[in-house]
Length: 116
Length: 111
Image (tube, rainbow over all chains, first blue to last red; front, side, top):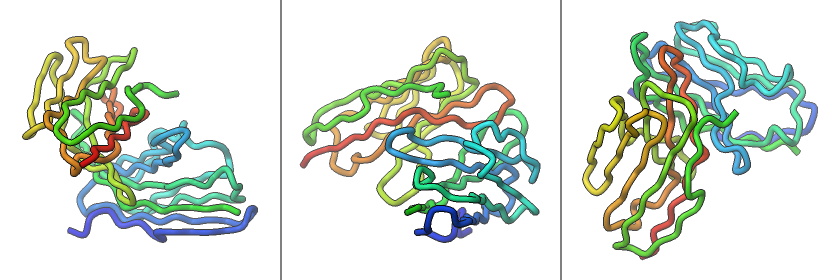
């Protein structure tokens, strides 16, 4: 398996533009997580899905952020409009949740977003 | 809300030295995981501890879960340059399946 695949690896955009980050989880995994990592705040959980359904989006910073998971093999994180303070590395992770305990989360290589 | 606090935040040691990293919380976790992250990559799982008081060893790394399942430690014996990286603890609260990460410890092992 190729692992969790994220695209693009790097994104530079101007303030006010829409940004879409993409993630393909590991086949067979039923949980998907979006994280944001910065030096100041560390690795923050933004939202996670179980079986394509958003379970907890309390970590989403504000209404400018939205995430979708239309099927088991694809998810997007959209920022509209983007702001310089959104600059960070965004990670997608997937896992196989049995409903009993959390199992290993497999991470993609991340998308480094720079908003100028 | 940061549920897991790690200390120290930064650690720079000489090759061959021993070190301990701590992960503390006021919350109880059903399990706790340790990950290591290298530059330009996502975190990779090292170990999962589930039972209060549990100790797991992975070569030169020893992981312990506190009796009350609120804290954990990672001890590295005879550190090597290859141990350099960001060490993250992560916990999940029972049934929640939301994996929260600690603040991280950035370790540098100098040859």
